[in-house]
Image (cartoon, rainbow, N blue to C red):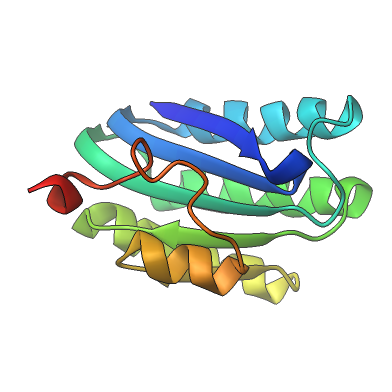
Length: 141
């Protein structure tokens, strides 16, 4: 499942992956970005940070990642380039993210993988807009 929200007047998207992570969730997120960009909610040159927390099941394959990158890089032509910080803990999501990173960089997109929210937000040059809500379970212990 993906839960995304727009911050900083449309310049930052923050999304959480949890529960069942499946390919359609990624695709729905891409088209949500397109719609949000078309109505002006998300600004040109936006940044995004996605993190995983409480992931139960992953049904995403390498072939799905190839398809997701094709869709994502195809829309980059119309919405402009964007930067992506991935803050990940789940080993399988990290493996899939490394593939995504490799493929996306071939198209000139910036994708970096981090293990802490602080590092991910710092790389994007933003502060965590809701530190009481946007946090990892390990940060609450």
